[in-house]
Amino acid sequence: MVDSCFRCRAELGAPPALCASCGAVQPFRADLSLFAVAGLPETYDLDVQALRTQVFALQKGLHPDRFANAEPAARRYSLEWSTRLNEALAILRDPLRRADYLLQRQGVDALGEQVKVADPELLMTQMIYRERLEDLVAARDLSGMEALRQEVDTAVTGVVQRLKGLLGILPCAEPEAAGAALRELQFLDKLLGEIDRSEESLQNA
Amino acid sequence: MAYSEKVIDHYENPRNVGAMDKDDRGVGTGMVGAPACGDVMRLQIKVNEQGIIEDAKFKTYGCGSAIASSSLVTEWVKGKTLDEAMTIKNSQIAEELELPPVKIHCSVLAEDAIKAAVEDYRKKQGGAQVVVQPVMASAQTAH
Image (tube, rainbow over all chains, first blue to last red; front, side, top):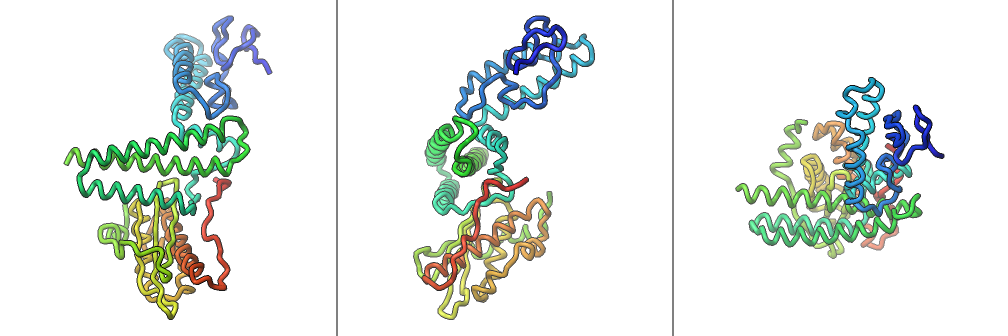
């Protein structure tokens, strides 16, 4: 479906936010996905730099300051588009939130509060990471922590790679596997947060 | 959010922290995790010939409520039979620790952990017990 400008009827590009022909900011479309708002194809395998460039360019055209003297409706539209673009950048740039967003759109809530994990291998790995961190903190071993961080970073890269395979083409054919990968990523992300906090507290001690 | 005094007590003086040999035939190990908080919980029981839980140990990486819930469960199960241990409900844990609604899932985790430990022990005995998968991650959980 091709959208047309509400004012001059010219064909609109993607996203259908600003008319290239008459410059009118279009009514906000709450039905559009975060990808559509950013004018990008929906896939996990996303070039974050391209996302950033694209969103900044759109932000420039839609910035509320540009519509400060426009009619109230246009002011509101520009604010709505800008807010949604900020959200798109924040969620889509993050490998964890991007995967969660895509799975949520398929009705899969992999990270809900009620979701529990019983995968012994995953839990054992996490337990060992946590124990190592605890020992490193006790030994005040900052370089050991840095080595641990690099190891966890490598693990993160591996999971993100797996997610790219699982969520590259949508809808995802294996939502269970994607959900499991996302949960693993969430554990690793929390662990990285713990490493950060531990390093900070050692440095400040 | 303020923790209850009981949670703080268990958090500051956790009971029975430690590990047992998970390959010991008399030891049952239950491991569960909650990705939402990144919590990982390991609960172990040592069962004697009479089927009584002689000792229990736990190790939990998580918030104060998760630590307190598992600490409390290790206290409760000592001296209990396996069947008695299986009747522990998260609601009892939550009530004892006065957990607020947002922390109820921490007590659920502790209930799952003790159940998983009992199942693991029974499985090791190669028993006639039906092995029930104690907890399973459901990716389709409703909001």
